[in-house]
Image (cartoon, rainbow, N blue to C red; front, side, top):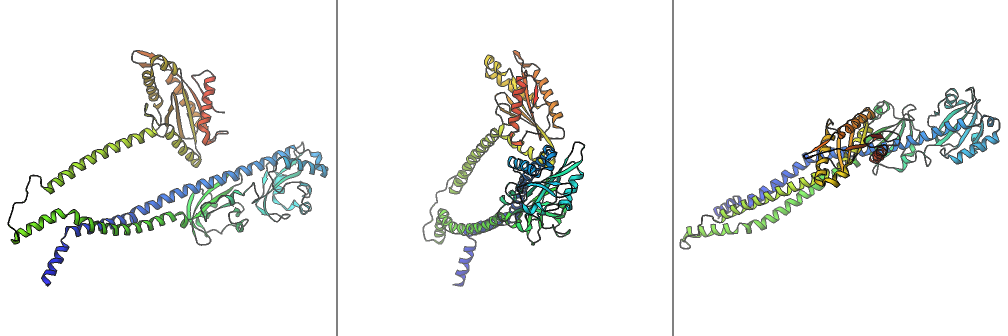
Amino acid sequence: MNAEKKTALTRFGNSLIVRLIGVSIILVLVGLVFRLKILMPQLQQDVADLVASQQLSLANYVARDVDAKVVARRDLVRNLAVDLPPHLLTNPTGLARWLEQRQRLFPLFNSGLIAVAADGHVIADYPLIPERRVLDYSERDWFHQALDSRETIISAPMLGRALGQPLITMAVAVRDQQGRPLAVLAGVAVLNAPGFLDLVNEVKPGQQGGFLVVSPKDKLFVSSSDPAMILKPTPPTGVNLLHDRAMAGYRGVGVTINAKGDEELSAMVSVPSTGWFVVARIPTEEAFHPVKKQGQSILGNSLLTITVVVVLLAIILPWLFRPLLDAAREMRRMARGEVEPHPLPIRRHDEVGELVAGFNSLLKKLTDQEQALRQSKERLAYLSLHDSLTGLPNRAMLEDRLHQALLRADRNGQQLALLFCDLDGFKPINDHYGHDTGDLVLQMVAERLLVERRKTDTVARLGGDEFVILLPDLDDARTVATAAAETYVAALAQPFDCGERTLNLGISIGIALYPQAGCAGDHLLTLADTAMYAAKQAGRGRYAFHS
């Protein structure tokens, strides 16, 4: 009996079905280890890069918004000081009406305008705040700086004495014709009031993230998503190493431990007009939560896969190997003499041979189909990003490369140029000589446009006879664009040898530069197109910059 059990166990252990089930379990476990140990760290790094890019974009967005609002208010108070009639300084009632009119026309200072005499006492203000009228501003640093300077002075963030709210003051001296200071005109802006730094509270990175606006000079938190941090001093040196780097001038992305002991991913961007910088921060636990969740999902799915594989193999493999088991059983019966020996059907291609031959045939067919499908997909992917006639990048690839070039330009402080080109005299060629000749000419134009271009440059065809050249990563975009445009005008003026005939063309080029006043990044292609039409109207065969 023991021998029979041992024989049964040996047979079970040597069973091909058991081995296949064991191998399947091992393969699933190897795949699990591979995904957890190799793919998951790579996924976490990819997520970290993506979140860092998003944080930097958000910080840039908020910093630009803050900078634009500060510049608008700074310029307003300077212009008002220039326009203020000096005789009103001795007429408080008239001056108050003048301030009221300007405040109603330009309501940028949510706490109003103040005219302060040279001795520091208020002459007039609007809106009228009784507590402010009795204040002596001669003790304020910004007041003395405004009297001594011809520039607009932006005060340090402070808690207002009259309103009890965090605010900044922008002040400029009102001078007589000889340039002597007569008074100081100041605009007061409450930091967290609507229309100024409220975006810091309205936009929130993630669920637990937030923004900080920091003044390195004053070592203060100017604004924060957490109201309790506004006008609080920044941490001492050594408490937060990334903060120390930011206070010293570093701008970028990094991981740090905040004062509460939580790890955060932070992005720092400067506000040029004030010397402040904006910090967009998000807990790394929240940033990497999708990776952690994905790991748990992989583990659970792998365990479920093992269970399903074992059950399915236990059902399917016995049925799949039944013909072979039946043949083996019949052989054993003949060996034991239970049946008379009889020939089994033997053919050149037996069942195993036919299975192998059928598998090989099927595999070859599947391989051929897969290769054809892959080539088709590659061709479709290529055509989705390239012009089928010239092989140049199409609009989709151009827009992607333009977007990346704009990000690099903003990040690295460089410039780029976009040349919008339209052929002069191409339509008559198509009309008189046919589309085949027109296509040949377009291919030759593409070859000339590619001459002497850098690997980082992009020559794209938008369709028809319109081409666009992107010149990124430049230090002097106007000079490079001018040289390129002159080269193209000269190159396209040369005759085109089309076999039996020689054809002549020209080219009109519109150029938009970035950064440049009036040339927003997302409208750069439209601005270059507009400049191209200006070049055509000026006589064709030339180039024009967008102004």
